[in-house]
Image (cartoon, each protein chain N blue to C red):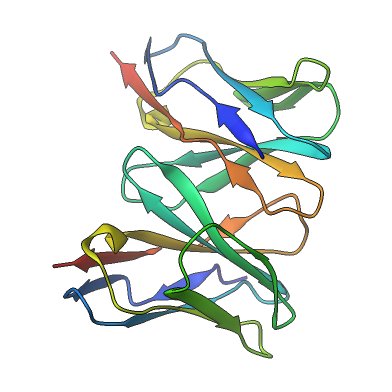
Length: 109
Length: 111
């Protein structure tokens, strides 16, 4: 089967940098995605890594190491509006996207 | 382009009843997936449809069913509702296997 592990909660200070880790177990791995979900809202796509390395999109970056079955989402210059839940998701073979249980990020002043 | 729409947004039912939820994907997207989200459990995959065919099914009882129409719109049905079915039901459409675009969800409360 497939499984993903990510921390349940993270707290960080406004303006700081935070890293949310995700480890996974799966076969036929294609790629790792990250989604953001604000309270009461729908998940929205942030990034996708199909190859090893770092993908940067503005203040957000995502990293993948296929050999370590590990990835992370890096958020820089944290803003209060970044307070949300962040989900990693794995795509493997012909199976549907499998999501982790999410990391609730709280940004404090 | 209009986003994914789901109706109704909120629903209250009692145990034993059945419910049908509707999802209209982004225009041109042929894949529609359904997820159940409950506090602390993340997004649990229900089913995926592509061109009116169920391509994948999650580990849910047979009370949960779905279908997709020729215009890619999709419905899911839950029969004989249980208290534990109370959740946010999310629909997502995609044009590729990499990115899912989610609708606002239907909040189902079973009393």
